[in-house]
Image (cartoon, rainbow, N blue to C red; front, side):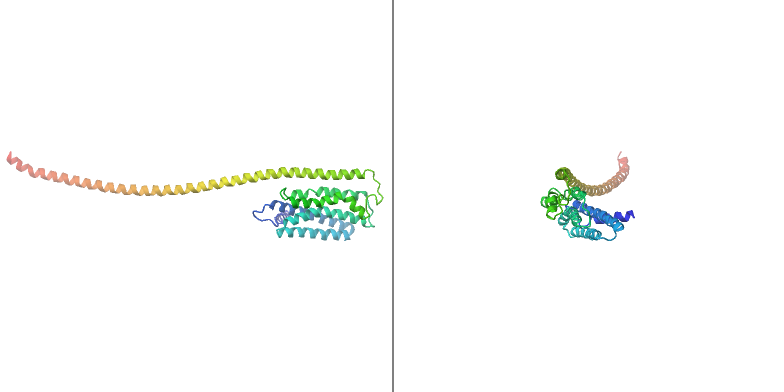
Length: 288
C-alpha cells in the first residue's frame, strides 16, 4: 500500500518536468501541493457526505477539486507550468473567498462572525504559495499570482458590502472589527515579507551551489581530459617500449651472430696456425 502511494506521489510530482528545465523544482513543488490539496479536499468531501449526504456544497467540492487537480496537471504536462502555477495561486485564495460569500448569501445558513475571519486566515496561510513555486527572477508571473491573495484581502469588506453581506449589514456590532482588519492585513504583509526574505536567501545559496556544481563539473571535465591525455601517453610509452624491446632483441641476435662468427674465425685461425707451425717444424730442424 505504502509502495503504491509512493509510486503515485513520485509519478504525479514529475508530471511536466524534463531534463535541463530550470523550473523543474517549482513544477515538482506545484504538483505536490496540488496533490496534497486534492487529498485534503477529497477527505473533506467524504466527511461532508457522511454527515449531510450529497449536498450542493459537496458536489461543488468534489467536482471543483477534480477539475482543479486535473487542469493544473494537464497544464504542466503541456509545458504550460507558468499558467498552472498562477492558476494554483489564485485558486487557493479565490475559492475560499467566494465560498464564504456563497455561505453568507445562502438564507438557509445562519451567518456567524467567524465567517469573516476564517476565510481571511486561510487566504493568509496560502498566500505564500506563489513565493514557494516561483523564483524571484519570475517577477511578472509572481506579481500576478500574489494579486490572487491581495485582492480578496484588501477588498474583502468592500466586495461583501456591495453584495449586501457586509459585517455590519448583517447586524454584527463588533467594536474591534476594524482593528482586527488592520491586524489581518499587517499579518499578511509581514508573512509575505518574511517569505520573500527567506526566499531571497535560499535562492542566493542555490545560485552559489549551482556555480559550485558547474565549477566542479568543469574541473572534473579537465581531469577527464587529462586522464585521456595520460592514457594516450601511456599507450605511446608502451608502444615505444615494445619497439625498444624488439630492437634490443634484434641487436642481441646480431651480436650473438657476430660473436659466433668471430669465434669461428678465431678457431680456424688457431687450426691454421697449429698446422703451419707443425709443417714448418721439420724443415727448420733439417736446416739447424
